[in-house]
Each structure stands twice: as structure tokens, then as C-alpha cells.
Image (cartoon, rainbow, N blue to C red; front, top):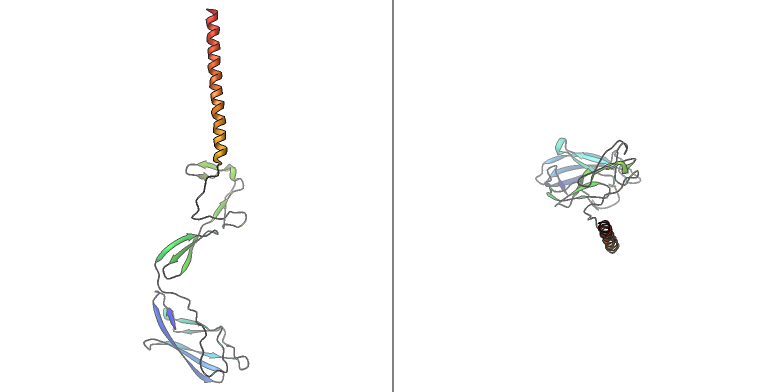
Length: 212
């Protein structure tokens, strides 16, 4: 089978199964070059054929070169030959950075070109007892104040905290037609006020002229 070491390098491991007694087996691992990785002894239940080793795993080798085999699904049965139905390898080849994304729950996920992804950080959400009392600052930022209360750092989407919308563009929530209508009304009101001022000035001028 193919495995990956800590450096992400693919290696071939050969497993040799040897029956040592009734319901007892020995599994030995070697590299593709024939170097020994170690061996382990396994025992099976005579009636069910299930593995009785606890924990259900075999460790071949030691230190940084140790190979752990999870044998929880290994069973002994009345078959003529060894049958390997599936193998799952907990590892992958070395990969380079491809992209990063932020999920709605705040997880910062990095994807690599080997098909793997990993959560490397988490963006929290800060809430306040009275958010309306925060101090408005430049750059659409807000500063803490005593009136706003103590900040609470929480995971996104929990305990009343909102979720994140990454890679989203906030659109305008203004109704253009309604705003133009208000602008026309404001313009007409301004025009009317200027006429009132002009008329008042003309009336005052006439009054002064009458006294003369």
C-alpha cells in the first residue's frame, strides 16, 4: 500500500501476514526496498472472527519512522486467501498553497494543490450589551465606550452573535425613485423659501421708499 511520511513523500509499504497458531497471526511491514519496519502479533476470536487486540491497531517501527495501522475492521474468516477490501491512508503528498476562504462560522480554511484543506484560524464576533452606544470612527469602524458595556468575544453564529458573509459585496439599500422624489420636494421647498425671502426683501424696500 501507498503511505506518506511527515515530509509528504509517498512511500510503498508491504505487509506480510503469517499464521502463527489457531486464531493468531503475525503482520510484518517492509519498505519497497525490503527494509524491515517492524511486526506485530494479532489475535482473533474463535467464534466471531473479530480482532481481540486492544487497542485494535498495530504499530510497526518506532520513533519518527513508526507506522500505525488501524485494524478495527480487520476480521478472520473462512476464506482461501487474504482479501483487502479497502485501505484508507491518513496522509497526503506535500502540497503548495492554492487559496484561502472564510466560512460563515468564522473558520479560515486554506486549500492546497494536493486536494487537502486545513482550518488554520477562526475569526470571532464581538458583541456589546448596548451596541448603539459605540463611538463611530473613520473607515466604518466603531470604538468602545463605557456606555456600550463590556465586549463579549464569541464564535460566529452562537449566543446571539451574527454570522460572517465572506466574499460578499454589500449593495445599496436606497430606493432611487423614492430618493429622487424627496430630492424634488426638497428642491421645490428651497425654491419657495428663496421666493419668500425675495418677496420679503422687496416689501421691505417698498416700505423704506414710502417713508422717504
